[in-house]
Image (tube, rainbow over all chains, first blue to last red; front, side, top):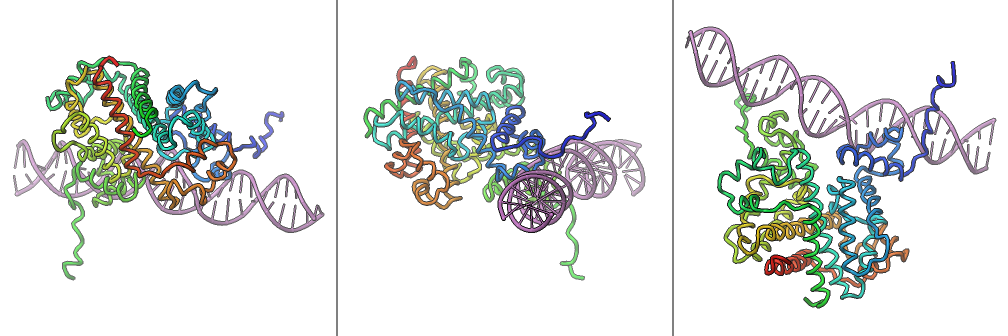
Length: 230
Length: 230
DNA sequence: ACGGGCGCTATACGGTGTATCGCCATGAGA
DNA sequence: TCTCATGGCGATACACCGTATAGCGCCCGT
């Protein structure tokens, strides 16, 4: 009997802490979506029994919150932005990039108030970049408006991306070809404006559409920051 | 033995169709949130066995899609709007109202492309209201931008509302009192701009904040519709 | 050396979505 | 009118889920 046959010591396989639990959960979610994250599977990936996790987290929903805050670490601005516009634009684009790296983030974005340390750091940096440009309330409104825009835009983009992946067709091609249900609907003639939009519209890259809408919203914010009463 | 003792005829209790399944699911979701919607519970509410539903629905996710489209029926505009701005503002407010009546809608909004007949009718009416004001691509961008804004804003509002309900504290009061974790974070002094915003900011009604941000975005759209190249 | 506490595991419970199968009632054909 | 096929429906079953509970075993302080 060689050493190889000696059974593994049963219990302390890896010290385990919150951080590695979160990392394992994120890895699972990156691979198979949020649905692939179960307490049992996270535990298995850490060579632990399922109940062991409950010493470090209190509930599965809390684990989701922790995952979100962990990703917010990728969103914290690296260097001080040139001006408020650059700060907000950067925030939007970094959030979008994070959501493209971790698509499950789109499912969670805006679903719960983000109060983890990294989320707070992002908010702090954002508010700091707008500090003094207008009264506090106007600044808050500006941040909330821009955040609402990019949250919604990111969600839609990821939803479309998944649909494309599922059908194998780009949104544009997708109704003429064999979009099984929508083609029929458009053919009924009950949606003339929609049909025209689909037929005549240019297919534009998601990032361009995101950036365009973002610039519009930033223009609006600029106008209000200039005249706080607006 | 009276008639009352006669056993119920076992099988045809209610004819059952897609519509009543959707209605039952919506009722359950209105009462207990999306988590309260399970195939078994929907079936039970219709005096049916769980598997019976699968003759009318192919999957639980599809049931969610059908629920969303059903609610979109409440969002279809009633009369022809005065102008494009009124059309978009009305769409935003009707969507918000629907989400306040059916909070679970916030969990689903933007999560999947909305392709049901009512969703398409909403899109059709919206595009029709903007038809001819600019080139097709600009119009699309306008609708997408406004939709992204109110989707994100509604999600945040509902998330805050739930947090308030869970803690019993309004977002404003909530950190000084016993917001157990955030108070401590703010007290560290690592978030001066955030602290100032929380301390000096005015508490504003959710609808006002929604409408204000919406008007900003509509102003931006107005500017772009005027000069399609913008 | 011993005792207490704590971290961990095993077990268990009530629930989930849905595949499979077999029954029974109904409608068609002889 | 009798018979047979069909199709909708129920029961059953499977794999999995989140988490409450209880008890085991190790480590540390004394």
